[in-house]
Each structure stands twice: as structure tokens, then as C-alpha cells.
Image 1 (cartoon, rainbow, N blue to C red):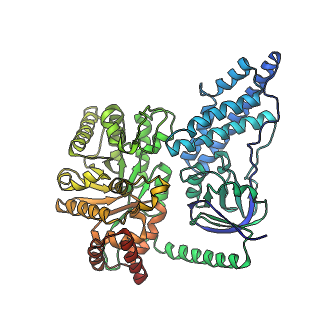
Image 2: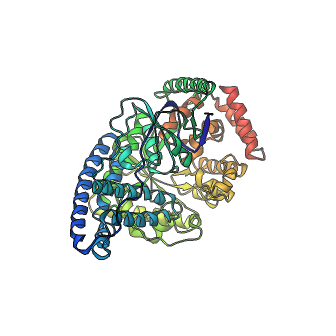
Image 3: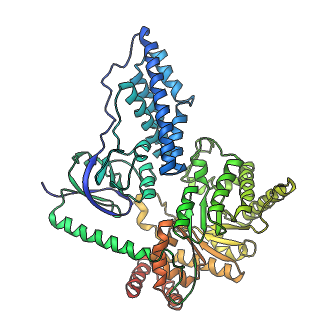
Length: 578
């Protein structure tokens, strides 16, 4: 049969060639009656209770396994499933269906699980929609125990394979072994799905959201996966196999070349040093950043601490997380951003209003200034952690000086309150702000007189400057951080800060793009913060550059009229300096 190319979403880079291991779907309809007699309801409840007890025991064991192999965050997903079994909104509803409607246990589990999963799928927020998979995983576990079935396991793999599935449940990904699992291909999923997060965390090539064509893949057939392009190739021709083997070898050579830069400082060939920091969302990612020799943490996204909890994390829990990150970085800077919720990020337990335009509405510092106790609790935890490292505080979504002044005043009030309570804090905490709204960029000269530092968030700055929803596939072609309007705002912010002797960082996607390196050097950016895995790539790009040439290049690029022209010129420059 002819070669077939299946296009999905590339969420974790890498080219892999191996046989398919098809993970059987567990979503088949139940071949059982929907209801039972009144006399049989107690027996159904007893069966359900046994399934619950077995599920709780399994989830506890898997959570411990995840903690050892994948870290606290992924263990928390499994622990969250275990807590769901005690949630009054979930498990008692299954019991109620059996008692009052005389549902068979299997049918009750399926109907209640689908009801709850459907509620999550209907949410506007992509992260929350993806949590429907976690609920269905819990439902499948209960059903398996009710049926007396053994769930398919990945733990027994002893050969290199590409795992193919409708989707991977949290309990599946705990069992992934990088020695044998070369890549993942799933029918469902998006960039923020659990499978995507795990694949990137483990460095496993992955293509998700590849559609129904995935269901035709047979166990044992040869596949090629290109995680960068989001491509899965079935029945590859000999010429295709050879072409991808060559690409694999180039990939290995590039990785080997990059490793030489891991322990080198981030500097241009004429000796200009810059600071390359990491973006993190969890304590575990701080360890990865340290392993990549990051110069610090340029963005600690604290919202993940909230999103991985089923209630607002209290001061002590937050303090413990911030302290551990500060200690892991051993004196290197740790920029902690206060809660940036709203827009595309929601908390089910924090009742936020439904909005027509959430990116333009009630989010980030606007919530903090409105619900001040929420902000004060977080600031107390950050200030308490400040004495254990080089901690800096950063406020998101600042649009005007009034917001900045209110946020800074609350921070200083909290610091003074802790000192009065006899709780030690650092005396040298810098307080800065994100520049992600055009109004903040345009007023950078005024802000620079009051802040200790800026961090340019290019993801939102591009979105707001170009009026492009970065999640909307219909207008994605317009989203480009090389747009001249964006570049002029970046230059304005850097120049305004430097006039006041303040430093400027960047924590959006642009900072981790090697193509942008000569431009950012030329503009005088001081600190670049990115995903930890991009640090060596940017170091390699920097080592090829001369800072004087980059300044001249930046002036030339800012005189161009379109993003396409800027990209073309940067591409040419990259070839010249390779």
C-alpha cells in the first residue's frame, strides 16, 4: 500500500523511526443493561464501593511512582483524580443514580463521568477543556474494576516503539520509559493537553490531534514521526526512510554540537555577556533550569501553583514552593510573577465573571488589585521566601502608572507588616513589571523612573499591538513578533530603561528564538528568559555574533516595513554567520 502522511500538531520536537505500539481504546460502549431491579441496587452499590477502593489504592501507588519519576506536578494530577473520588459533586452522584434511578453501576459511572467531562469541555479556557481527559481517565478506571478487566500497561515494554493512542491518560504517561518509548502519536489533544506537557517534559517526540486516521494504524507497522512538523508517516517508502534517517543523523549531530555550549557563558564572539534565564511554572522545572546552567529564573509563572490545586493555595504552601525554587537557584536571580489568571487561564474554584473579551477584561493584576487579600497572601509568601535567595517581584498586565503604584504600595505594606511580626525578609528585593500592553510600552519613560526592572512579555505585547488573538487559527498568520510596530515598542522600552539605569528582560517566545538573537543583541536587551531547553540553542547563536555588527543590523531592521522583510534579512544574516 502507498505511503500515507498524517498531519497533526507537533508538540515535542524530534524525528523517530520505529514500530507502532497501539494502546487499545477503552471507550467502548458498555454491553450491559442500563437499569437493575430495586432489589439489586444494594449489590450494585457494593460493587461500586469495591471499584472505588481499588481505584483509590491504584491512584495512590501511581502518584507515588509519578513523584519519583516525573515530579510533584504530574503526581498532583493523579492525586487530584483520587480526590475526585471523595468530591461530593462526583462520586455521590454515581451512588444517587443507582439508588434513585436504579442504574447499573457501569451505566451510572459512564453517565456521571460524561456529564462532568462535558462541563469541562464546554469551558472557554483550553487548559480547563483538556482536564476533561483526566475525569474520563478516572471513569475508565472505575469501569475497568467493575468489569474485572486489566488496563493496558506500558510498563512492560522492552523494545523501541512509537506509542499510538486516542489519547494518553495521566496513569498511562506515568509508565512511559524513555528507553523504549521513542515517540507518541494521538488522535486527540492540543498543545496544553496532559500528553503534550509530559512529552515535552520527558523529551519524547510527539504529534497530537492527528484525527481519525490514527485509528487505522496497525500494531507493529513501521512509522516515522516528525515532532517538529507534526507529521506521522505510515508505510514509508524506502526513499522516505533514508531521507529521515539522514535528518535523524543531522539532529544527533546538532544535539552533540549544542552540548558543547551547555557550560559556556552566554556571550557574543567579541565578549558581550548577556543573561540567559529560564521560564518555569513548577519547582521541578527549576531543577531542569539549573541543569541547563540557566543564569536565573526570568519568569516564575505562579499561576500553575494555583491551577494544579483544587482550592486557593495558602500562604505556607506558596512559601514552601517559592523558597525551594530560590534555594535551588543558589543565589541566581528568581523573578516571581504574581498571579496571572484570566484571559486563557481560569480557576474553577475562583469564580470569575463570564466575559465577551476575557483578554481585555478582568485578569492578572486587575484581579489582584480588586481582590487584595488574594494578592497580599501571595506577596507575604514571596517576601518570606526572599531571604532564601535572590528573589525579585514582578507584576503582570500593568497598563498605567496608577496600577503600578498601587501594586508596589501593597507589596511594601506587606513587607513592613512581616517585619513588624518579626518575620525576616531580604532587604534587597527588586520590584518590577511586565511590559505586555502597548500603553505600558509607550509610557516606559515614566515607568522607568519608578521600577527596578522591566520584563517584556512578547506573547501578549504582539497580541495587543496587532489586535490578533494568538489562540485563533484563522488569524494566526498575522501573529508575528518581528512586526515593525512591535520592534519599535521593544526598542523604546529598552532605551527608556537604560536612560534611567534600569535593566530590561524579555520572557516571551521571542527571547528563545535563535533567529531573533542578533536583533535582541543589537537592541541592547539585558536578560533573555525562555524555556530551559532553548538556552543552549541561544548560546550557540550568540557565540556566532559580533555585538557591533548586531547594532548596525538592528538599525537596518527597524527601518524595514514588514515582518516578512525582517525575517528574510535575519535569515540571510543567520546563513552568513553560521
